[in-house]
Image 1 (cartoon, rainbow, N blue to C red):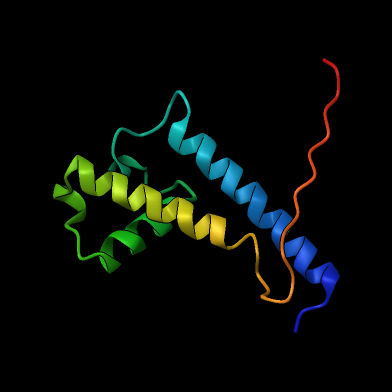
Image 2 (image 1 turned 120 degrees about the vertical axis):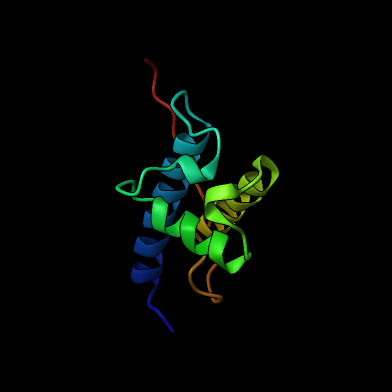
Length: 98
C-alpha cells in the first residue's frame, strides 16, 4: 500500500494531466480527429495505443471512432486520479480575485 504522500503526489500529477489533456482535446487548436495528433505530441502514444487496443485502423478511422478514442483517453486520465484503492481523491478549489 502506498503512503498518503505518494498517493497525493500521484493524484496531483494525474489531475494536471487530465486538465492538460482536456484543454488539448477541447481547446481552440484541438485536433478534429485523434489521428491528427502529431507524433511528437505527448498524447500521441496514448491515442495510438488505445486505437490499437480497440482494433481501429489509425489512418482510416471514422470521426465517431476518433471520438471514442478521445473519450477513452479522458477516462484513463480520470481513473488515474485515484491511484490507490485505500484513498479517495478529494479536490479543493480555491479562488482568487483577478
